Length: 352
View 1 (cartoon, one colour):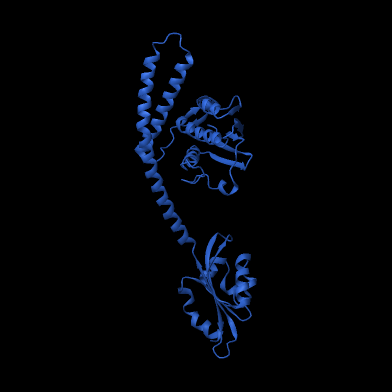
View 2 (cartoon, helix red, strand yellow):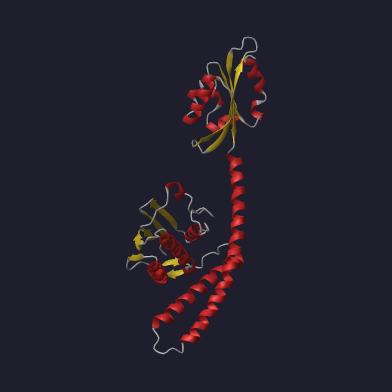
């Protein structure tokens, strides 16, 4: 078929196909360039027509694909290409070479371009919502399973307090340890109650707090665990930090997750350092360890729900920590090197 006949056949239909359509002749000059392609590449059709295709397609990866197929004069079917400019797009490309019926001479090619971006985004959204439903169901089950033993533990601590009250000259540390454990049980129970009632992490109930005091309390609570695992906890807490708005229960959960992860990353023991500092309008909390580090391929996934590389991991700790930090208008960042350790940095805005 002659290229002019194909152009005439497409003239009335190219705009209604729903796909981007480019028709080039044997010299790779554009003969048809419909409006869908104009939107994809931000090029007006009248500026593209009669120009060679390599003059109007700026994206190097797409142009390389076109050039190879046109040079080899082969059919190209359902090849996906990702564009980053002028905006991110996922395209499906089909290229059909055109030969004359009489002498089988090459006359040009038809390029069909389908924008899959919206379709893929919709699929990803459905998958994400499905995962969130699964996570919510799982988290509710876990919460119920934890709540019962928590209640039992609290009852046993009350019984233990009654027993030791009869012991004279007992160490004050015993009373302190029992009181600390009971407070943590009640704190966890409050978080679980809110979570069960709302089906999700509740909004933070913020009050003005001195963050160093919260950190000291969490470190004291985790100190025995660290000591049993040959981990030394060091703190460098900048004095005179201003107050910040925090939900103490939720922020303690963030710190507990980071400290627990750090201890688990150092099975042979090591150093865990926690520091605070003021940087402009933010207070930064840095938690660093000398553990095994996080492989580069895993680093960008650690905040994904249910993603874990641990045999006994749930994949919930870091995503929940990130959500809590964000609900405080802050952000959490991570830097890690395999075999050298990991550093998490939390940035929280100072109360105005």
